[in-house]
Length: 249
Image (tube, rainbow, N blue to C red; front, side, top):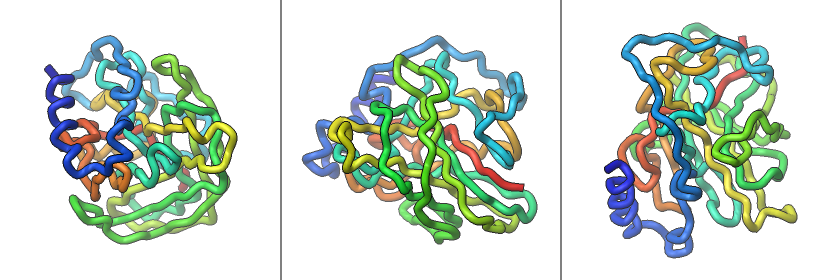
């Protein structure tokens, strides 16, 4: 039933998608028809087997691992490459007191193991439907591309950037790190899908303030989407939150 709904929404969305993008998949699930086992979801917030990821240091916030055994696990185009140019996922996070942020990261389902550096990143505030809000910090930095596991027979890769400390006051912000591949040998087939976190209220290895569900946004010229909520059933499907984090203290 879910697949049928998503297919219907995707067809309807093609009316405003550029022609060159109509043969490309917006989500990882559409791209490789991934599936898994049902997750055991309850109504009580609880972190399963808490363990701070080695790449999250100093770890202010981590939404949690992508659960490859969860049937809802997926990924959304977050990339700048020949097949999915200018597609960005923005993940919300909460700052509870003034914090010096020194880095951002995402976990991504990557179809090639290469990226072009430097890598663009952003922190925004005031984001809403159709509105990109205000840029708080933007730049380009050398990103890691570290394989952390295999998920759906594809590499799950951590992309992490670091920068000079940026103090953030109490409030809600949105982060983005965009892997890109335009010049390398394998860039012609490169795709990058930011991985979802689907185990709330039992997020795997979550660190820091609670996740903000239903608050992520997607902006993509390739797929004709202008700051749409990732849970609203557009061509990006229905995704509540993504696997991403913030370095800081």
